[in-house]
Length: 152
Image 1 (tube, helix red, strand yellow):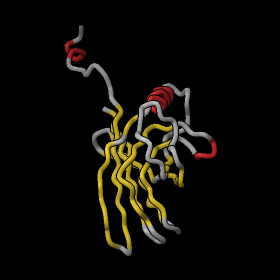
Image 2 (cartoon, helix red, strand yellow; image 1 turned 180 degrees about the horizontal axis):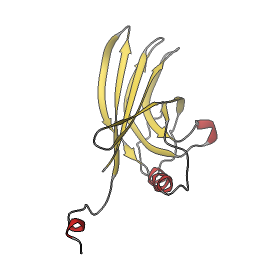
Image 3 (tube, helix red, strand yellow; image 1 turned 90 degrees about the vertical axis):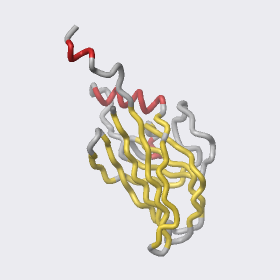
Image 4 (spheres, helix red, strand yellow; image 1 turned 180 degrees about the vertical axis):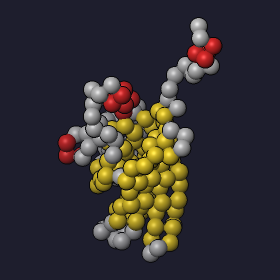
């Protein structure tokens, strides 16, 4: 065996986290970093992206009102609220980064987020999902979501 091969890791992982910043009247009222759960279907479609059997990148950030615990078998948000295409970038350490700031027109509670490869109406494939302590938003509040997926 080549000596360089002996030092290679046995496997590659895909993991993620996102920052959730709640802003009201220009003031940050909460700020948290939340580790997400990479879903089975997400792993499947990452593998398919590698060899070209799937061509849609994971660019859509979804938020919702569902509080069902996240599980690797999830395929969607439980109570979809809205979505947007995140601004994409790359960060050192093998991180894909997506960010979007949602602005609200009504009172609601947001307590789940997911990262998908398309719009909700098209039944997209979900890479990751997580549930968190609800953020009670009101008209004109901002919720900034910055997702980092690390391959390593």
